[in-house]
Image 1 (cartoon, rainbow, N blue to C red):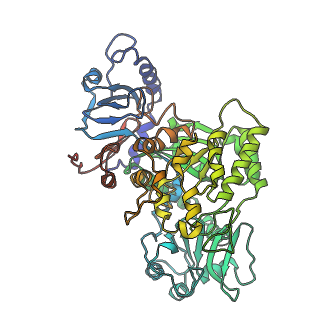
Image 2: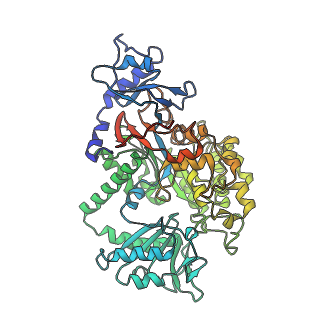
Image 3: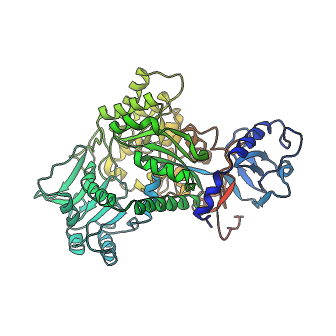
Length: 593
């Protein structure tokens, strides 16, 4: 079960005790079972009988952990940790279950994850007709004139190409017949393309004369008529009308919506073992909302947020938004986010050479080099990390060039830990540049196996082999590679992404370029200590050592030793955050033999 929202607020009422516990923990290296006064220190929580993988090179495995005031005070054998058990200590026998640091989601969209739970889920649709039917059913419970929204469709994952279509994308003909009284907006699984019906396009004033915006495309048929598909920045033509409608709702309704989205996202993360979440781009307005929720104790997981907003607004307000360890380590905001291209599935990734299956296009540059460079300078001036979405090989090269110039023009004696978000498709010449420049490759294991069915179609076999999801090559060249899901693009489940990282197996058991698989240890690091490093948080999370935050996940399978296919059956037994049980499975799974 997951603790109700009102119970989460108590997780941050222990600041003073945590500081004391931290000093005790630091001293515990020398005196592991005594306080400074010589008296035995009792812990609030002790886990015993576990198969604990600490992600600490000096002590990779342990049996037990003692926790007090939200911090780990000792790690060791059952016998050693018994000294921390007092009359009021909660003792949990793990019965041999596998425990490790709580998963850190390295790149996803927190509010988007919550909002995705409040709209039509289109991920499982196998045909365009199924989606039309889903939307048609929604019209029966939606008042005329109100928006119907959904997310998750992907034309490359349908059983067959819809008819009629343009370049494989559906037209809105059938949807118009099914939804004459409602505006419809359906976001592509990638988030880089949207579908709109005629009603929505009419509200937005989109017709045959509407020109493509810079960095985007309105897909049209042979007669020049928009078919309802909007790539990259063109999505804003429809989205701004939907946003305008939402802005007219009463303040209390908007606040309740945001709170519900945060609650749903937190619940989803906790039941999947995620204790920290790196949010890949929120506006200044959304950060204000997150800060209010943090003040109210209504963030169920720890957030590290990248700000994505207009350079002018950033220039005037950025200094007021820097937060490190705010609300008892539940909110940190110290990074900027930009996107320089789109997604491969939507033919929006910016490539050095044209798409193999769309030779008239090399993708889309969604933000100018000048604009991204200005953002980078703002990052340097305000001591913010810079994180740029780049998927195509041309996009990655351009971002590396920007970073290299910034590092040369504004040298620093300390690593800046700037990041490229996704880094999915690289030219071989650019792979060594990540390690050389100290640029973090913020990647998502699940994207590899999810997209593999169409990657060779888009890039061809040679480009796919040399540069698609080359995690191993990046690590071997000296780069830090982190992991995540890009939720709600994919399910936020770290187990699925871990499985993809260590197998690269597709559903038909074909392996997508197996030479790039990660070891189990590398994959766990990518979801724990390396994600912590990518956020300047490796001193407080990412491994189970005294002094760090007591964020722990307990699983029914040993991710280091279990059979590869058994990884998919791994279930979260317990999620502990701040030394408190935030999620516990109703029916514990028996330990596999």
